[in-house]
Image (cartoon, rainbow, N blue to C red; front, side, top):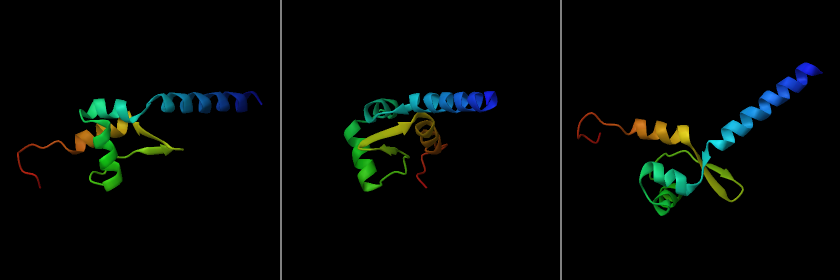
Length: 81
């Protein structure tokens, strides 16, 4: 039983740490230097494949997803293709 309690504690700790990394639209917009309204438009139109989570009626973004999305948009030249 002691091992099960340790496993549950580690699992709970992982959930808490990952949920602390969830950002609302305002915080995500700040990181991306856009407005929360722009993020809303991007979500509803599917203009960009920016991952987000729905938690009930709330929208959340993972910081790691935002960074990965920004990294995927890095260009070495002015070419758009």
